Image (cartoon, rainbow, N blue to C red):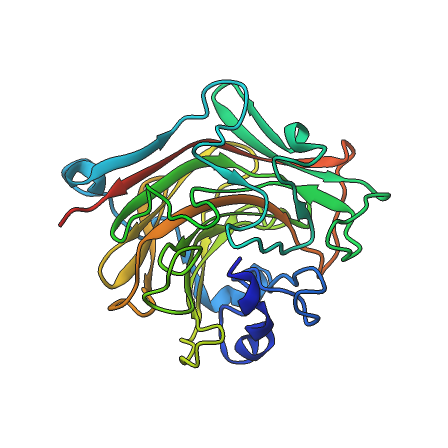
Length: 315
């Protein structure tokens, strides 16, 4: 999912990093082809943790001492384009096995569906689809970001907690995610050149009880050294396609803490913590094609998000 110009680093990083392609990097062809997905849960079994490992704060929850700076309940009947930038990442980068539709393209309203207080990102399959990137893809879908091209996100945070409630599609190839990128690197002036990516949640439609979380620093063309990627799998013991669950991530001075239904399940080191800037939010319903894709009878697959909330930690 990381910055488009950095995707050519994938092959080298995959050779030494557990994150492998968890950062939604591009194919070996770089920017000329669709992304290659990382291995599934079976390949990360040594890193699977049970969702009962953590505890909630005794005072209620960690957000009690934080300030709510973004509260999106998806009211109305269309995506609020003052809050969300749809389509590619703010730097213009497309990735993955589905083209992310922009607000100016035909099919926008069939991909970004706001109804009954929820956002559905609908991935459509069309064997005759004319892929705008000319990668030969037959899927188109949605991605939204709280940052916009050439300006920072007003709700980005350096420390705090970010949460969504979501339900995911049950078909091989579906690859929805809830993730963050550093606001100081994309799309504004960089104080720490390169990019920090936090994957609070990446889900595979053929592994319904698992999700992965990761953190990595991508140096791009800066000459800085990459940091070894981190990837942890959580076994929720739930069918994440059958009902909604709450997914959260706390970003501290030095750590990334993952929550499932408001219970802590994982901890990762925050890359380049001393120079990290603020982070903005992305949601997507991507498609990965490395092991094949099962097309649902309907011809589409839905990732549904009930809300997105961002709390800033002032301490």
